[in-house]
Length: 225
Image (cartoon, rainbow, N blue to C red):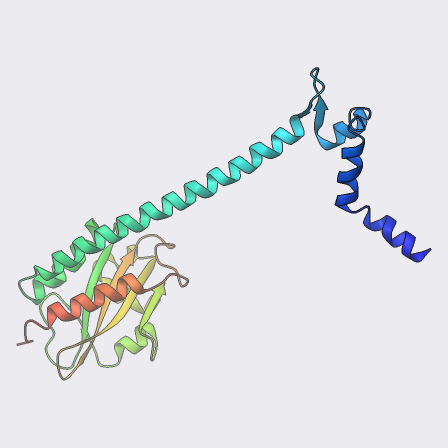
């Protein structure tokens, strides 16, 4: 009894159903109610045809596939555009003539190439800070992005001072530590966005870190006089 009840609950095996239909080809045609439940219909040529329910399922599957393809295409375009703009930004920075020009170019590429509010190059003291760079006191980078952290993505109130008169517009930041010259001095490359979702904690830092390495190598061409 228990075995029979269990088999009844689970239903017949698909192979048994398939064999039954193969041996009784007129079974479905003789049960219009079952056809309606399955979303099928028998046409005048004695052929089982797709009904509205089945067509709706096909349409929904096609819509999901189309949306997924569009998302993949949009992501690919965005990645390609970001890569192209990054290459252009690197060329811009490598063409800098001095520290001040480098800082100006970082700010310009942030706005013109990436649509951000600002790009900033900062350096901790107590020694001289190049013209156009933000001057920070020793240990200030730790206060801004946290001890032992290399980068920070998102909003950080302690970083607003980096952006000067544009601080009131900044809603999110991307910041990466730099080590420049020998002996090494602590620096910071920072980008600010007016969009609160422009930079978020779950974003990767690879692009910003790459640009920071370019700034480091470019800045080391010239001594800080």
